Amino acid sequence: MTSFRLALATIAVLFFGAVQAMAGNASLVVDARTGRVLSAENPDTLHHPASLTKMMTLYMTFEALHRGQIAWKTPVPMSATAARKPPTKLGVKAGGTVTVEEAVYGMIVRSANDAAAAMAERLGGSEEGFARMMNAKARQLGMNRTFFVNASGLPASQQVTTARDMARLAVALMRHYPREYRLFSVQSFTFRGRVIRGHNNLMYRYQGMDGIKTGYTRASGYNLVSAVNDRNRRLIGVVLGGRSARSRDEKMAALLDQHLGRASSPGRPMIAAASAPRVAEVASLPGVSLSYVGTQQPAVEAVAAAPTEAIVPADRPTAVAAADTKPPASGWRIQISTAPTAEGARKLLVEAQSAGGAALLGAAPHTETAGSGGAYRIGFVGFASHEAAATACNILKKRSYDCVLLPDGG
Image 1 (cartoon, rainbow, N blue to C red):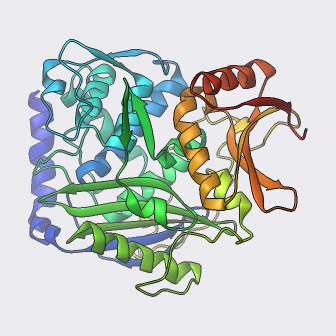
Image 2 (cartoon, rainbow, N blue to C red):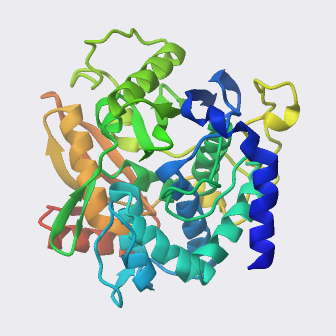
């Protein structure tokens, strides 16, 4: 306890001379594959992260899953402390439990503060203990101007980050846990009879966007980290300190438009037209296709002069297997439906991904044109075994989806 408070005091001395700047705006756009910074505004100015904090809580959860410390169905106790967290939350009473899967969906879709606190207590023994783990991981990832106090992002004067550090964390999530990263595209999920919908509105309106997190407190302003996949380019944008959700979203869209070479105007529709020849974009929701073990990282360019400011996470877990980056030569797929438009296909895939939960983590959403009528055939590909595909199919059938099991390529 004493050492943790001393650490807080030390960070305060180092950082909080700049607290007055937290009300301003900051932004950053980075190429996620190379780490090259494309544009930046106050990228190293301190801000409160608000619910962007949950990106680190989720990173730590994915790490624990890969290490075998927990499983998707592991029960997570809801303590009285966690249950008392203010909304937004799942609303589970003290003494109850949620599964790891429910907690993850709760944090991503609902931005549930009680789920974040419960997961922190499960992994760290206490939220304070988990904050120490978060800070150690932040240093490993090169997030040297970030300090965490809690797992949710609820107001805390000592909890700070920068646009550059949030970009580092987004890159780390994509690179280290590409399968789990796909969950950031989920729009809604069913929790004990209730349909819970997300509020990352720009993600559902901007072509090619597949994540990742919003955040807001009165002290932080409106924050957003977004990722876009466009013609084999993957960009990450960070906007901190927006005055409103709308102005924050508009700024993010304008920044991404600029670097994707898209026309930008206030009235421009951001959803891809059904006739647009980007079927793979609608369906694949890919992570970054990179190998992290025994490979040399590409050179990166930073806005700041010091090379240590490059957007490349320092920690590359060896748990990322070759299967994450090289699909198997053969396997199984499932087909669940057809849709008349690209946007309809995307929505169906996201809803099915939510319904399938952990059973779909080893597979990738997929769509293809169905004949000459312009419809889209949708499903999931890349299951490693017949059993895995059949399990996913059975779960989807129980949730009112048609499902046909096929060999990959069949």
